[in-house]
Image 1 (cartoon, rainbow, N blue to C red):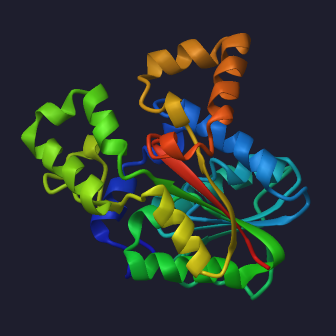
Image 2 (image 1 turned 60 degrees about the horizontal axis):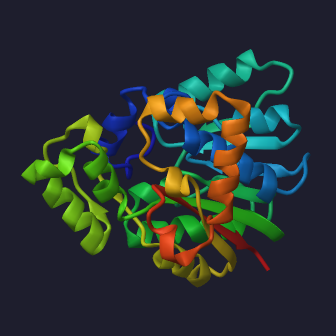
Length: 275
């Protein structure tokens, strides 16, 4: 563990080593859509991108290959080791920097980047911590720079619990009910399939947090949208065929900002601009 302020329960969850393959196995639509959104929303290379909470580099490494100057920070020791090894293996386009650290206290200078990715930290911080992380993102951005901040919908556990039949278990049903009521996700039995301690967002809450942090909010987008909660076999049916894949991605994009269905997306992406 790299930061004494990082919850050991959360660190233990990520030290299981599953995160670096998740977007290629059980969460493929999330991975595909996130990459498309990054392509669309990031400034052109060779802009400097700070990937805060970037795990093993699942997004940072492709961005470096695309010509971006990418610096990655993560609080989990295993993730930092994995990212450094992967960067070294990508010798023709390595990451500029891989550091252990905390989203609430970034090691970089003021106005030093055109983009900041917060594609994980907001899940695992309380309200004060989220405010600090967003303030730090704004501090290190140059004027006109963009922050892309990911959140998990507070309704996600209800939808996924129905899909997986988990809401028939009173213990899981209680977790899902609290997620809806407060957004505070607690897994008292420590079952890995029920995630770890986290905060899940209402779409309006994510927008408000970014606005309070001083960003001009350009939108909150659904990542998977109506394609959330598919089992891997169903994801493969859509994604492994070029025409079906295009049809699916078009359908998601059409409703990515529709308020009436936004909360049904497992993941949300807030887009903010520093004035």
